[in-house]
Amino acid sequence: MSLTEAEGAPLAGGRLTAGEGAAQIAQQVVVLDYGGQYSQLIARRVRECGVFSTLLPHHAGPEQVQRLHPIGLILSGGPASVYAEDAPALDPRLLELGIPVLGICYGMQLIARELGGTVEAAEVGEYGRSQLTVHERGRLLADTPTEQACWMSHRDTVFSAPPGFTALASSSASPVAAIESDARRIYGIQFHPEVVHTPYGQQVLRNFLIDICGADGSWSARSVIEEQIERIRAQVGGGRAICALSGGVDSSVAAVLVHRAIGDQLTCVFVDHGLMRKNEAEQVIAAFKDRFHVPLVAVNAEQRYLEKLAGVTDPEQKRKIIGNEFIRIFEEEAARLDGVKFLVQGTLYSDVIESGGGTGTATIKSHHNVGGLPEDLEFELVEPLRTLFKDEVRAVGAELGLPERMVWRQPFPGPGLGIRIVGGEVTKEKLDVLREADAILQDEIRKAGLYRDLWQSFCVLPDIRAVGVQGDERTYGRVIAIRAVTSDDAMTADWARLPYDLLEQIASRMINEIRPVGRVVLDITSKPPGTIEWE
Image (cartoon, rainbow, N blue to C red; front, side, top):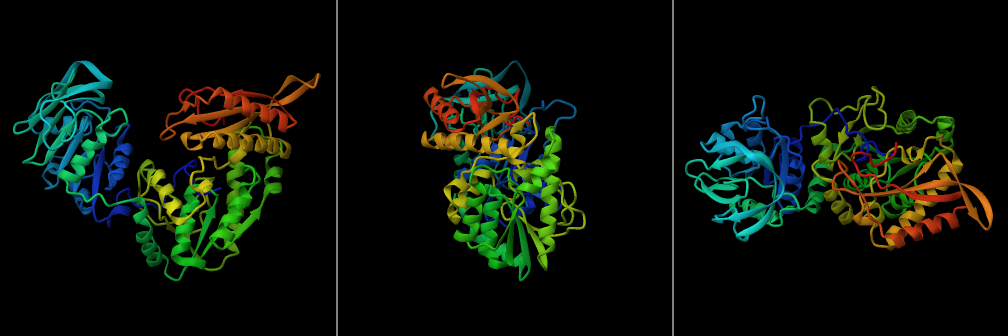
């Protein structure tokens, strides 16, 4: 269990703001978030073009933006109308920073309205796939076709471009769907280039970033490694650090990166709560002890957890018990290590953004992730991944030589299998059945080449039994539910259309190889209305 796995709540205290961790990047673009559902995606697409990006809230002023020395500024989309009384506003000084500015959707409407264009509510909204007609490519739409598909999501529309701007394109519901003033270095598009439904969207972003902003496109997640090693060494010096290791990609990459920087000054603590998948604990221990030679304290706490969970059926109570017990064990192990002043966290950039950043001392308080560390357990945070998104962390992990199964491990909840035993208490027998079922599911999905196509795939063990017939005898076996979903960010998810032959093979193996299992079912609920996990 990690203190900062993606499945847990983000750390609430001891953070820098979302932009401060990126202050020393040589070339970067700032994205101002006006509340759009795709704002994080814009930042990720910019990075895919080889340009580092920092996402700031829309109310960040010109001074905060200037401190980052960006080579360009992007104004995101948003759900508001530019005419609404409480709508997020545009500080006009942002257009006078001497750097190129690109407005997307709501961002374009803000620019158009501020500089004298006409923005009004359209008779009909334009949501979803639309056809864009390019009248003049300019610099922004260079190397894109005259007719192209794009993704729209708006009701207000720009009806006339501001004075001095060229209207580059239109759509059926948007008379002015793209604008540019090369003299002022200000550009706007009504459509969303960051989504896959806009086929030439990445080309438009490249035009802005490489041609207009002058980025060299050389940034990559892998280039972070040497930079972070220098920062870690400067921060920790001769001190000692501790890391709560779960085997998940975030904590694993953070641990290996910090170990490369400070060697045996780092000690990892791995708590095996007995709620992991088959052979997972052994794989984590082997990887860190034998492959990376990281000092590791491995605690076998399975019996301790089973005793605490006995008779508990409420899912929230399970979570609290599992989290609190982890904290107690971590506290006990930390107390045995002398002179530890630093705590390594696998904090990701998405955690920083979602928590709203923050200021204050780097001290762990009592209300974090897996239940909260005690108030008197104080460390200075080491967060080498805090500027990276999940896919970038995987790239760093691959570069560091982490095993493929660890780098591409699907999200796994902090409470582990404890919350996949639904409606009943957690017992050793149920955990063993669920572990075997999950191992078969993962094995078959990997054989089918589908593991990386799925956001998550796992088994659930409801506390029910179902009648069956095996060998001419009546059975009363356990039920296994298969859950597999596709998603980009876990905010929404669709149930995965696994091939029927694959499902048949999985069900057949589970029933034949796991004696207590008598029935296998498939969960075809998307999110919303359901959640990915059952509890």
